[in-house]
Length: 175
Image (cartoon, rainbow, N blue to C red):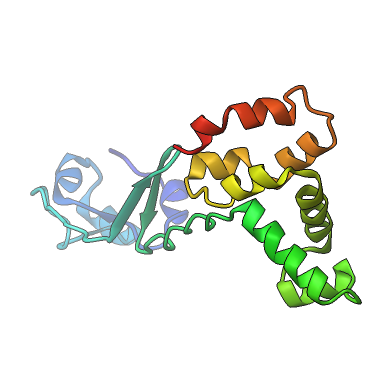
């Protein structure tokens, strides 16, 4: 390989190995003039280097990989809330404190004021026998079927499924 002065001037200290020096046809005096030297650190032997890096992975919707930093702890699922029990608690609080509004009660009960209004509407519209049976439900499936928004739709009669249909399906909610 022949180096020209223009090519070599673009590199500051250029180091080449012995093989290239042997193949180079440039006279040795010329090489010294250009500042070429043999790098003793380079060799033709294969060197193996091992890097140890902390590797974290988890499988969610896709495989996630993190180097050097672990993932944050998994978020716990929201606790199960029985809407009927919560509505009964709100109703009991509002009857003992009739001067309270939904806004002032929301600060004490730590429930949003709109949810308090919905819970009061639900508890007034549902039949007492359904309330007695539904307040004992603890399974996730049953509590999902008795969410605030579903019960509001049922009490407004805006749902294709009526309250009568839900009452007839109580057996599947007890599971």
